[in-house]
Image 1 (spheres, rainbow, N blue to C red):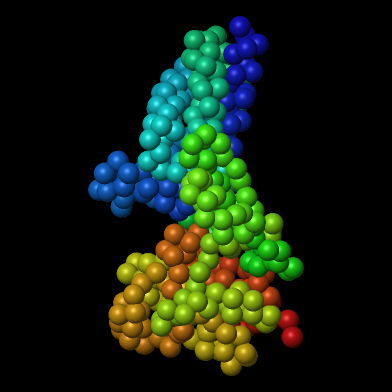
Image 2 (cartoon, rainbow, N blue to C red; image 1 turned 180 degrees about the vertical axis):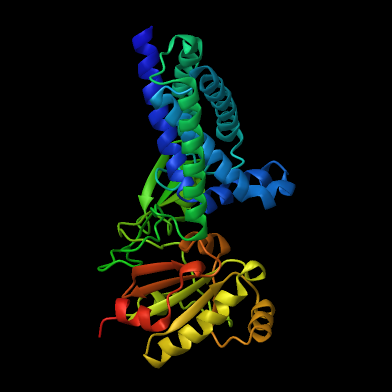
Amino acid sequence: MKLIANISRILVGLVFVFSGFVKGVDPLGTAYRLEDYFIAFNWEFFIPLALFFSILLCTLEFVTGIMMLLNLKMKISSWLLLLMMVFFTLLTLNDAINNPVPDCGCFGDAIKLTNWQTFYKNLVLLPMAVVIFVYRKKFKAFTSQGRQWVLTVFFTVLFAGFSYRCYSHLPLVDFTEWKAGHKLYPENPQPVKYYLTYKNKSTGETKEYLSPNYPFSDSVWMAQWEFVSQRVEDPNQYYGKSLVITDTTGNNITESIIRNPGYQLVINAYDLSKADVQAFKKLDDFCAKAYADNIPAVVLVSADNDQIRRFAMENNLHLEFCTADDIILKTIVRSNPGLLLMKDGVILKKWHHNDFPDYQTFKSKFIKE
């Protein structure tokens, strides 16, 4: 029993530390997922507190994992662990059955799991939490009660501060597809394949065809078979497939931005009503200097033309505004606004608005003649 309890303690501790870290390193991304839950459960009044709950949840999870690994305050931490596991298991069971949120984000953007996979993961961890709880009084601490409290408080403050730092700047580790070094279009694009599945109306037999290699011109066949589903197979491995950029007249200009062979600045602002105005004014001057050096800049927002025009006039901005999906914009740079430097479709660098460089520093450090 002792061996099983200690193995369970270490395994659960590692999972909780990892899970808390990958979410805590990106607290704004975790807050977005919590907002999805608040909307799904009609708890919109909690949305203003999403960031607070994000840092609280990640810190609680990380510190619980540390307490398991270091054998700290096991009578208390085992209760905490069991309650969390019961809650998470019930929540993810509901997710798996009803799918209120497509991605619960239990491991942030580091590892993507389906709702059923997340539930099965919790089904494995829950019995371990029960074993730890049953054995809680027999774990032997390596230090005194007072020092255990000191260590617990130390890790709590340390991780909460670390998570807030990642919010105030940018995640220390970027697990998204928009991380520096990723290319946003394929070098040698291969044709995308579309597979169509049809079912025989009489026998129920199904067949899959690679479009357009199916007898769509045969009226007799078409009368006997009905369309069921379609799947897409894209052999091209690249990032940013979901990004669509349109100008203020509705034209798709995505390719001209991401395929620019020279340097390209992209300003990201997912919500103009909450954007840092002083940061935008700084960027206006910054981009004017960049334009003089033949470095174009574009602002990506999720807003209509009236909102864009009003925001630009009120703040005396001379930037080029385009639109994109707000969910994508929230992911590209965890800042409102944020700045991204690309060249030939490759993301070179990202900045939070708290860390925008002055233009001369930017030019000397990142722009090569």
